[in-house]
Image (cartoon, rainbow, N blue to C red; front, side, top):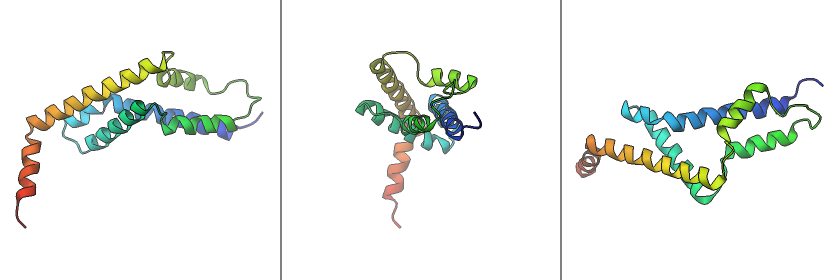
Length: 135
């Protein structure tokens, strides 16, 4: 049938989505190491929290679905063998409400961890002192 550009792009979006999910799952490590990448992780957690609270889907899911709609309908497989496993990781066969509640709890646990680190490192006190300094 030939090379299917849209199927390849959809597979790449799935890989990107999996990498983003893995980053959100493990990104707290950056906070523990006091890396500035933790700010990206914190923003991603906030974005995930809003998406799940509102019942919205990730933009990467919409992009993947759009690319799949452009995929050749005559193709035997909708994705490669490897993508099938990544797909199951991203979209487990569980009720959507349960997944959303789990994600919200996960985000809240991460935010509690960030609050603990901020308190431990006296971050709020340093921010307040920085704001009170006269130019």
